[in-house]
Every structure is written in C-alpha cells, then in structure tokens.
Image (cartoon, rainbow, N blue to C red; front, side):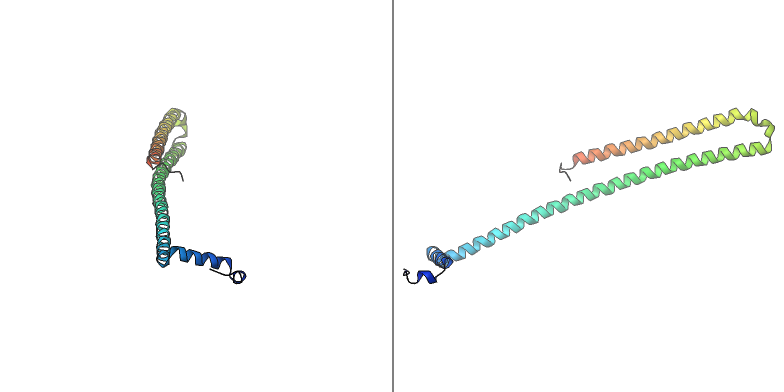
Amino acid sequence: MLTAALMPSVPVWGIVLSALITAVGSGGIGVLITKYWEHQRRKRAQTDNVLLELVNKQGRQLKAIRREQRVERHLCEARLAAQRHKVVNLDSAFEGVLMLFKAAPEKVPELIPEIVAQRQAHRETEAAEAAAVMKASLEAAVKAAEFDESDDGEDE
C-alpha cells in the first residue's frame, strides 16, 4: 500500500489507473481493447448503413426528377407544336385574305362568310389540340402523384 509520504507526489489518475489495472488484471486490458474496437466497428457499420440509405434515396429522387423532366419535355413539345399549327393557320388565312383583296376585291363581301367559317373551324381545331395537351398534362400529373405515393413514404 502507498504511504502517506508518497500520496502527495502521485497524481490521482495514476492511482485510479493502477487500481484499475490491478482490479482487471493483465487479461482484462485486452478484453477492454477488444470491446472498444468492436464498438468502433459497429458504429462505423451503422454510419455506413445510414449513408447507403441516403445514397439510395438520392438515387430514387434523381430518377423521379429525370422522369418528370422527360414528361415535361414531351408536354412542352406538344404545346409548341399546337402553337406552330395555330400560327400556320393564321398565316394561311391572312395570305388567303390578302390574295382575295388583290385578285377580286368585288367578291370580298361574298367570301366573308366562308372566311369566318374557316376561322371558326381553325379555332375549334386549336381548342381540340389545347384540350389534348391539357389532358396529357393532367395524366402526367396524376402519374407523377401516383409515383410519389408509391415511393417509400420518406419525405425529402
């Protein structure tokens, strides 16, 4: 045992450490070190699992974003095609009216009902095209919502 004369010169942690070594024994230190490293491996494995889950979630989100981009690109192309068709219709109607004014200005009053009917037919066609694009847009939105619901329920 330590004498009172030695006590002031020995730090407290030295006493605790020597008592721990004496209590555990030389084999006990190996057990403590082994337990420590096992704990570190489990902690690292848990961290790796969390990271892998995050990477997988990010991959699923990226696939969903790319799918939504493809759908949006197709919808934009459809809208653009409808607008082009509308411009072509307007251009051809305008050119027709100009040719009519040049060729036979006296027949203009007779042909006005035909021009009005042709414009009405163009408007109906444009409305049908716009409805088709809107329907496709709504269907794409519904599919996207169904996909979001079928994802594993994790919020972003």
